[in-house]
Every structure is written in structure tokens, then in C-alpha cells.
Length: 383
Figure 1 (cartoon, rainbow, N blue to C red):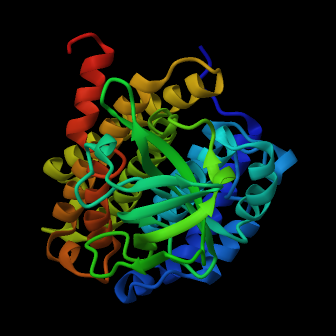
Figure 2 (cartoon, helix red, strand yellow; figure 1 turned 180 degrees about the horizontal axis):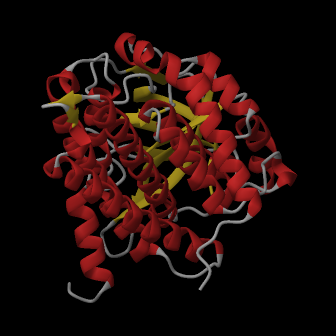
């Protein structure tokens, strides 16, 4: 077994880390405080090649493996969760469904601009009454001649209302199956389509510099050919998309945990009490050791899941495990980090305060920790 990364992956990690430290870190606190989505750092991330990383060069992508994409997201998250959310949602949720399930015409039409970072795309899944029960979508799409007529709403959708958002993929109820269950399909809706409105959400606890939106469809008409893949495949497409998305959420947890450890090591070596650095006190040293141990274990399970995906082997169980474990590791690391910083950890001038807030979404988004445990239980044959 070889656990080493390739030379290309090491170079990628170092380049993204340098970028995050030099371009994102100096502005992250202000952007978070003012709830600003930065088009400047978005442009710079695009220039670095952080969008369409796993997409074939045929469509303007980077043609990299999934581990490389996860490493890049991890390094952004090590500095700021909001920017990592933009990258993760832009790739896994925005680009992914189009790349894996879109027709050749749809790929040629949308992917080049999304892979260059010139445009963003949202993934409309969650609704006010359909979160963990995503199959209970109330948004409807009725075929009227050569057009789908869409009515309903979505909530908590990342990247869906920026100035460069070119559209969204929306899960819709398109009928009823023979067994009485809803027929679910994914439909592409371009920004600016009459009857389609997006509203940016503010007042968030976390990811305050990422774009989060509500979507509203009021007799919104789109061409029949805007169906993504076969009719009725929406639930399958959604589950496949979430498997990949769980890996990116895992990478955000891993990167955030590493950021907490890095900040804590720096602070505890510089802060002195009773005549010596507080890192020398066993109670603090053990916290740091526990953080390092959990991060190492989290990295192993996440990278294994990505390796399985790259090898085209089943990875749903490992993706759920990685998402669950990495998000909860960041929870414990952020908690330790604030404790190690003492009163300063509660102040916005110290980055661990932001990491503490940003972590919570990782236990909720793309399948709560409770849902991950259900998924794992089923996959090991317990349910």
C-alpha cells in the first residue's frame, strides 16, 4: 500500500496553500463581517484553475483526479470556509450534475464557462419542507407542449444568486410513478428566465462570505430539452451528486480542522503563563495531540473514499463515513481551538472564532450527521 501523493498533487497542495494564505486570508475576516461575496477572490480562484478540476479538458476542465480536487478544497478550507464553500459547491453541485448526466449539447453549452470560473451554477434541492426528506420535493414541473412549467421554491442554495450565476439545476416532481411515489426529475433553469427569481439570504451564522439563496418558480417556462438526463432519474442523479458532494464537505471539515490546529499551535507557543508557553502544559499539549491524531485519521478515510471513486469502485459508504467523521473532527478541533485561545478565541479578531461558527454547517449540509449514520447503517446491513 502506497500512501504517498504524486508530485503533481504535492505541487497542487503547495500552490493552493500559498494562494489561500496570500490572497484569501488577508480579506477573509472583513468579507465575513460584512457578508460580502468577493468577485475579486472568485476571479483569482478561477485563474488558479479551481473550477472544473475533475472535468475533461474537452469541456474546458483541468482533467485532474478527484483526490486533487479534494486536496485543493481542503487547502482553501484551511484558511476560510466561505471560499471553500464556493469552490466545493461550484464543482460538486454546480458542475458535477451537468458533467455526469448532461447531454452533449448541454455540456458544450454550459461547462466551458463554469470550468473557467466565468460563471457559477446552483443545485436546487432543499425546500422549506424537504430537507433530509429530499424526495418529498413539492416543486412541480408540468409538461405543456414543448415546455416545462415549473412552480415551487428552494432554500439554502449555494452560488445561486451571484452576478455571475448562469442558472440552476432544480429537482422537480414531474409526475407519479405506478407505485404511487413521486416521479422526480432534474431540470435546468437559466438565470433571467421569466418566472424564476432568486433572493440572497443574509444573517447567517456561518459561511457569511459565500452566496446562499432562496429560489422561486412562478409558472416558470423552460424548453423541454432542459431536462437533465432521462425523465424520472432525478432522485438517482441527486444521490450520485450528494455522494461526491459529501467528499467535498469532508474536505472542508478536514481543512478546517487543520486550520484550527495550525492556529492553536502558533498561539500556544507564543502565549506564556506561569513563565512558559502554554503549549508546554500537559493539559494543552494533549489537546493538540488529540487534534493531530483525529486529523490524520480523517485524512486517511477521506482520501481512501476519493481513491475508491477515482478507481471507479463503490464509495457511497466511505463517502458517508468521511463526511460524518471529518465534519465532527472539525467540531472537536474548533472547540479545542477556542478553549486553547481562552477569551481571545471569542473575539472576531482571532480566526478561530470564525472557524468555530463555520464548522456547524458541515454537520447539517448535504445530509446531516444523523442521516449519514442512517446511510452507513443501511450500507453495513444493520437496517
